[in-house]
Image (cartoon, rainbow, N blue to C red; front, side):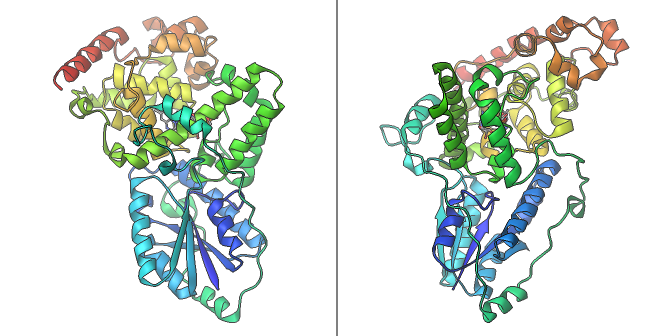
Length: 475
Ligand code: FAD
């Protein structure tokens, strides 16, 4: 009797609810992963994210081997591949962890139908979330659309302990072994096989072990100072776990457990407050996943009606300058260069560049959303869409209307221009105060080969507000 576990965005053998259930059934277990052309051929795929994925798969494959379970890499449309594989292996049950994304839900319904037609059982779990989307509602029974009341409710919900690790497996019967050998598997591809060049060194080391070490390091060194450090992009004050959480190289229960242990050990209200602030970030992650699950239309456009007809300026040259980090606003350009060079950007800077694109350049936030997805190692539909809609004021939690002033942001969060200097080496010789205010004389800009500001912040702010007002009045 065989049981098949289908990995998707849960690339690990520890703290994996579905996998631990599959093993608990006491049958022989086969793990698999399917390269889905509908995902791989998307326009917004980031090579750096694929490289991270391949690194995680490499380790997952090794872990399966060490634990003496077969692990199969497949290719094709999952609605065909998974039911056929289950049939060929004579599997009695297929198990996976659920996802919130509209595409994944549709795919999973099709795979389920295919399996049911063949009389094969399907069991699924909510593994990537601490609280399942159906398990939390407002008093009127609706899904939440505002974060603060969501957090209050979510915080009080019971969270599970980490799930059991995958245990070493036994052998297979001859017939099963034969069936396994007949299956059409592929070797682990390289990024080059897909026509992309590899980054020499990824900003985040892929895999389960690296994610656990990163969690440990963050828990030991930075968690209790999170609140003070989280907004300073020049220091490593945040966990850098987003890519691991996106692809499930680490289990969310394990992450949560770390915060609870830290709270138990903490000796001051201040450090407890810091830890809770980080818990709130984990809750933002869940909030955006819950809203995407309940309102799948978010993936295709603005949540708020007026934004469906917003008169964006959409100047392609301005967009190009933003993408390349050549807007003439040092903090914006530094952040975009960090993204283009590493595939990661600090959260404070994500907010600054998103506000700049939408409120200063008056460019449709969906252009920025897509550019981020093409470059982020942690690119995730729910978090990215949520972040962009928040920044554009088109999302659920839109009040007050937020417009970041790039110069006040830099003065507050990068006062010595350390971050700006790191990513804009051509401005190394310019004084810190000029870098953060952006008041760099034109001749100095010219000498440093650094552009003049492409727009005037104050003028564009007035322009945006006027357009926003009109759109609201026309409702
Ligand atoms: P930490 O500060 O250590 O936070 C811990 C974890 O909480 C993160 O790893 C992440 O999983 C989650 N988290 C933190 N902040 C948020 C948030 N605002 N929304 C949702 N989850 C959060 N995050 C992504 O994972 N993928 C994205 O594609 C993404 N796109 C974004 C786009 C914009 C415009 C903005 C403003 C934010 C975006 N974020 C995204 C959220 C946030 O910037 C990153 O999660 C964070 O910078 C990752 O760094 P970290 O792991 O060190 O975070």
